[in-house]
Amino acid sequence: MVAADTVEFYAKPNYEELKKTARLSGLEHTVLGTSYRSCRLGDGTKLFVWNHTQPSTDAEWVKDQPDIPAAGPMQCYQVLKGDTSVARVKFEDDTGGNPGDFTLILKLANIGDVNIPSKDGKYAPAGVVPRDDSLVTTAVYVRKRSGEYPVTGSLYFQWNKSTQRVEILEKDNWPKDKLKHQADSANNFTITLIST
Image (tube, rainbow, N blue to C red; front, side, top):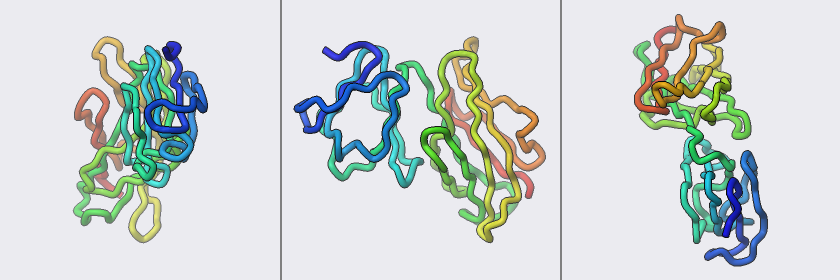
């Protein structure tokens, strides 16, 4: 039986050859499907997993994984408390540009850069938000196809206990004259470019 607040990783499918036990906040890159081929989750945990070269390919695993594919899309992980939320954003453009004219670049702790093309329509991870009062800060850049950066700022996420949702808090570094945000669900948001 797996201890609470831990995840056991195995070298082979079907939980053969225990290789590592990771605790909450445990994090590794490029090991799923190579070093680890199966895992068991202890009570109170989940795994946030993503692709090393395309972090917008992500998932949350809430149950044991008996056969992690050798060439699968998920390669990296972070062990989270089971009630932790992963905030995700998609990027729209109201300036009249074509799809992909702009890219929203998010700098995430533990993950790296997440690039979201304008008008892509897909949500990508933007921050891991615990259910406490902590603020999660994500650096934000908008890059033009030409390579210029007309917008920079920061996103601030926080769990709201009364509404049971992740919220974006507007602080001094939010470029409200260039970007707007709206909540689409409990942890998904649309960021829209309104001016450059």
